[in-house]
Amino acid sequence: YDVIDDVYRKHQREIESCLEPVKEQIDVVTKALDTINSCHQRIIEEGDSKKCLIKVIASNLIKAIQEVEHKYCSEVDIIAKNKLEILSQQTKMVEILLSEMKDCEQFTNQCLKLGSPAQVLASKQQMTERMDEVVKRVKNDSLEPLEEPDNEDYDEQEMTVELKDLGFETIDATYSKAFYEQCRVE
Image 1 (tube, rainbow, N blue to C red):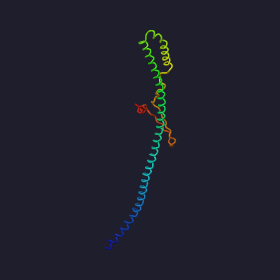
Image 2: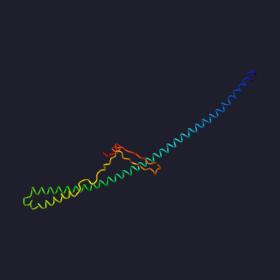
Image 3: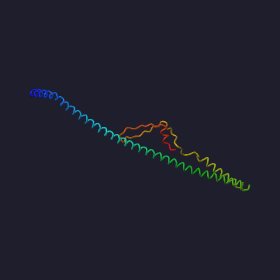
Image 4: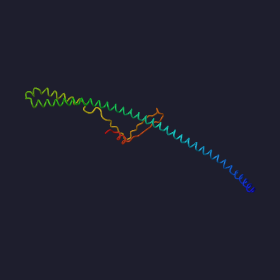
């Protein structure tokens, strides 16, 4: 029994001495694993932080683009309103002129149909003066629309939006004719 015990202790010490490098490597590998796990966590946090920053930037860009959209749409509304007001005034003037012309035509036709030859001859000068006056107004007043829609060619129109207030570079966007056709009001 002592022989076995002696042999066992000798082998035990030998096995334990062989185990020392494994124990040392366990410490090294454990530290490496901790380092890897720490890097893993930092990468996740860094990614989350960058995604948050990207969302803030995108939100600011969207806000800036919406402000530009509102500004340009407001300008278009003002221009269109002004043009429509001019056309409305012109429409009223042309309608008045048309009414006067119809009144003149109706008066003349009534005189010719209902009046006696003596009455027609007596009012001939008044009728011709009135017809001349109405015709002169037509020649002097422009019947062409004073305002027309802009017939700009949008094939490759470039729109530049300045976003320097937000610290971004200038964004250049080229829109095709199809883009503008999608925006048309039908």
